[in-house]
Amino acid sequence: MTNQYEDAEKAVLCIYDQSSDAALRKQAQDYCDGLKNSDGALHLACGLMMRSSAQQVKFWCLQVLEEVLQHRYATLSDQDRGEVKKFLVSWILETCPAGPPQPPFLLNKVAQIYAILVRNDYPEQWPEALTSLLAALNSGVAVIDMFLRVQDAVDAEIINSEFHRSPADAAVSMRVKDALRVQCLNEMASAWYIILREFYQSEPGLVKSCLSSISRYIHWIDIGLIMNDKFVPAFYALLENDVFIEEAAMCLTEMVLKKMEPVPKIH
Image (cartoon, rainbow, N blue to C red; front, side, top):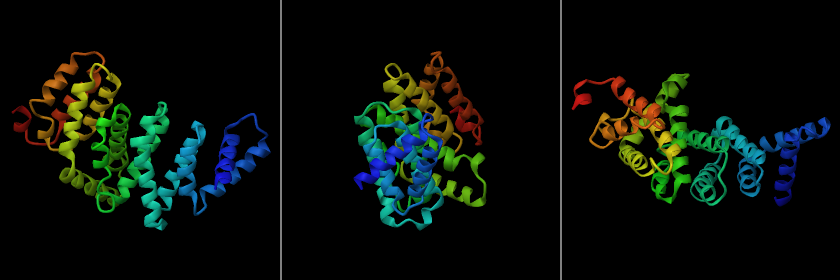
C-alpha cells in the first residue's frame, strides 16, 4: 500500500505540473481515474491525505471522497462509511489543529464532505455528527473555525431551500432540522454566543464567520434562541464596530424578516 500511496502522489503532482510532458500527464490522469473508480478509493484517499504534505494531493483526495460519497454511497459498506466519518472527525479535531494552517479551499471542501455524510446518515446512523464537534470547541480556534464551516455547509448542502431540487431534498432538510432542534440547537446557540463574547477582539475573522452562520439559521430556528438579553445587545454592540457591521446587520435583518407573529420580536 505504501508504494500505491507514493505512486498516487507522484501521479497527482504530475497532473498539476504544467511543465510535464502532455502524454505523461495523460497517463497520470488515467492512472488517477482508475484509482478513483476502484473499490479501495475511500481507503486510499484517507490514507494519502494523512501522508502527503502537498495541497494539490490533499485536494485530489478530498475530490475522491466527495465523488464516491455523492455517487456511490448506496453501494458502500457500513465499514467504509464508518471509516470516512472517523477520518473526518479525527482530521477536524486532531490533525488540523496540530498542523500548520490549511488554506480555505481545503477547509471548505472538508466541511462540504462532512455535510454530505450528514445528509445521508444524520441522525439515524450518525447521531454524534454535530455533538462531537460541539463537545470539542474548547480545543481551540481551528476546531471552532471548522465547526462554523460545517454549519455553513449543512445549510448550503441540506437546509437552504434554494438548493432543493426535489421533494426528497425538502424531506432531508426537514429531517435534519428536526433532529437539530431535538438534539443540539440550544448548545449551538450557546456556542455562538461564547464565540461572539470571547473572540471579538482576538479573532475578528472568527466572529465575522460566526455572525454569518447565525444569519443563515435565524429563519428556521426558535426565535427565542437569539431574541434574548444576550444576543440582541451583542448584535447591537458589534454593529458599532466597522469590522462586524455588515454581518451584525444581517443577523438583525433576518430577525425582522423571520416569518412569525410580531409580538415575540418586540418582547
